[in-house]
Image (tube, rainbow, N blue to C red):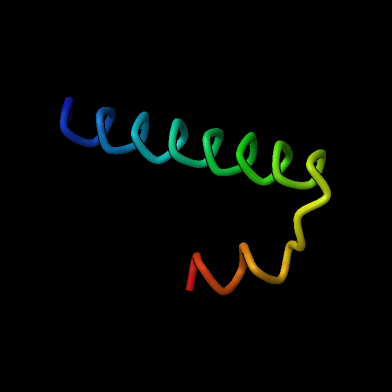
Length: 40
């Protein structure tokens, strides 16, 4: 059961990090298309 909670926490944290990172990039006026290519 604890492993599931850890996996869930990691997923949520990484999602928040990606959201913050993309928000930071858009504030710096960097093309979102380039970010999409890097994430692919």
